[in-house]
Amino acid sequence: MKPSSNSVVLLLLFLSILSCHNNNLKTDEKDLAREILNEKKVKTESNNSDLKLSEAGKEGTVAFRKREIRKADPENPPIKLYISSTKNDTRHLKLSDIASSIRYIKLETPPDTALLYDPSFAHNDLHSYIRSDGNHIIFQGLFGLTRFNMMGEYQETIWKNETGIKFLGSGVGYGGQDFFGVMPNTPVSIQNGILYYSFQDGPGGNSNAMKYKPGIKKNISLKSNDEITGLLNMPGDTLLNSNQIFPSGFDYIFGTGINTWAGVNQKWNSGKSGALLVTYNDKGDTLCVFKDYDRIINFSKPNYRNPEKLSCYYFNGLLTFKQEYNDTVFRLIPPDRILPTFIIEFGDSKVNYMDGLNPDFDLSGKYFLNTIQESNDFLFICYIQYYTPASKKGKAIKYYYSLFDKKEDKLNNLPGFTLEPAGINNDLNGGIPFWPDFITPQGEMMKLVSGKVIKDYISSDEFKKSGMTAENRLKQISIASGLKPTDMVIVIAK
Image (cartoon, rainbow, N blue to C red; front, side, top):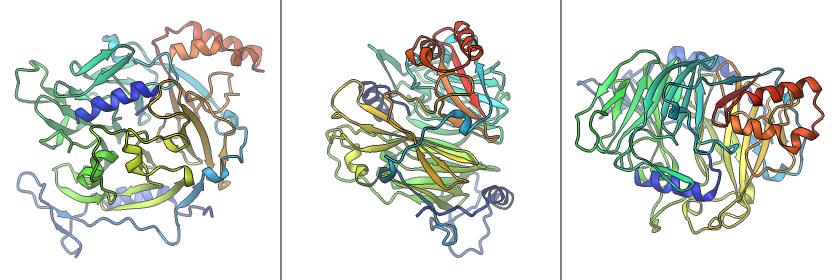
């Protein structure tokens, strides 16, 4: 989820509702990840006194459900990052401080050109997402899922959204009972070459957890219905059918190991249902339910607002997440443990979840995590601050950036703020500022931008006044001249 203006965000959220101190981290996480993947192929031995029978098994299978564990390791407590109290301790960073090379990949235009369309292509905060395992690039846009190779060449259309998308003036809405497909605002995930995603069948009132092996065409057919004819085929294998899309379908679906996966809920669904995260095996057996202890009760507003995002990513093969309005970043050690890893503290500028959900609460001056990504060396934190009442329109958000250097055990805050997502000054080739949207398992940092953003940068005062070499200046002009405004480009730094 990526706001460019409050009005668009509120529209998208409304339609989505209708549809549905510092301690060094001593744990060797690479070894931990290998050990987990090798040893925890979802053992269901009955000699564990904490286990009880699962009720979600298919085909008469018997599995055991484990009780959740979320205790910190006393020998390796989570690293605390005091952002609000260190905000004025700033450092000017350059891209060469975190990377040594940069390259651009223009995604080839697919046969159906709508698949790469982004309604916010004129801005630096796109509504589209990219995911990659180092072998495939998955583009997730308003109209569906498209796969490219690592050179940006079109490989296949995984899914095309045909219904439930409405253009309303300068905004766009999606969802509702006529939406049949992959929701644009809930990013898919890819692990071990398998794509995991939530497929929403609005007409049928179902939400399906799916997995798909890129390049292997296998469709699951649903019973045809009068509202949408000829579209009731979903690509891949159904892992779980919730039988009820309002609101019990999982917001995010992640692979967690060999034949195991997890469903994760955003705050509204988790606070209402009491389930933050649930782990399963591919047969549909429930392995562990992680509770949301901050329940939503006595909420009397007809609609809710959720200015903070549920942040999820993989690090060394482990699902890592931070729930909205919670300070703690957890790693999932499948199937039954979440390990506190980082604590991101905003102090008095933090907002509690009930106020955050309340559309009438003034968010001025409050901080919210916007995005978080992690490499072997750094933790990238982008957070936002609302500086006008939430009911007002226009540029009401400030973007701030903090970089935690794991090796130096130091939090670096970039000075100032921007009114659109930006990042670190690109001194490698003089291109647009860089901040990763996604980091591959191989450590390549990826940022998705439109051709228009690159072309506008070439015309900006920032570009004209920069001290880049004449060679880099000509290269940037050449790159921009070869792009159309609606082209999608991946900037990769490593």
